[in-house]
Length: 362
Image (cartoon, rainbow, N blue to C red; front, side, top):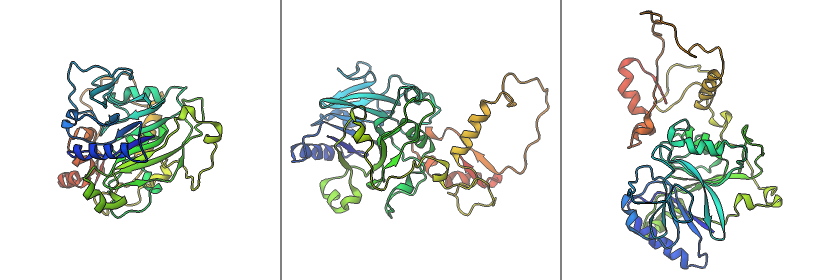
């Protein structure tokens, strides 16, 4: 039995009290707790009542004398009694997949830091493992952002953030094929179960299903009672590790089983741009980011693409500017620590509108 927690922030003592209470309850004791989201750096001063694993540790400063935790895979750092950091194997690659001992067994956990890009160095270890031919899937995927396309499988909510999900996280979720994908949000929400798509790099077709769970931020017991279920920040799961599941369990027919949300159809974006004018700053007109990246990938594998190899010296000759281009393409927004520019494109649009920009893509 494991516990899942959303962003802790500064409310570390509230989390310790909640975990202690649950461990002593009829539902407990629990074997481990996994936290998806941000937390104060002062959390390293708190011992925990059960093993707690922190996901978003990309900005956590770990002492040079810190070593990998005993009996743990490389890259898991012990911060305090029962407190562990999913730190990664190097400063460059902090996203990874671990097999973590939990109770009398072990579970496979994938962890991705905030604002990670699927094609960056920080996800290189993760990509290598989930692309291996023997990889089947993982039990947990911990991320800081919600994946693009998942909204269609979530119940409607007036309180959930309406920000567009991350394509990079959707791509990682698609490839890692988790049984449970956990991410922080402002409210608790749980998707319908959905099928996983087969992988071109794996020799196994996935039989297990996936489910996405968003969790609210950690709050005091009084505030949690006022918010009710929508403000739920901790969730219990009784999980049989994927590699221990029987054929009967894998073949179990679930009610309301949905198709994978990580496809072009689920993104709901028109393939052909029919209008050049945006109705509002948040709209994304044209092909989806998934389609755009796929086109780039396919083109890069084609021997005939024009920028392959060394370019001939063309002197001062330059191609004429396309005066009809009104789209600004940006890369590197994941380095914005505040996350404001990545989540609110209207700020960028307002800044570049004097230059004729009517659309911002990243």
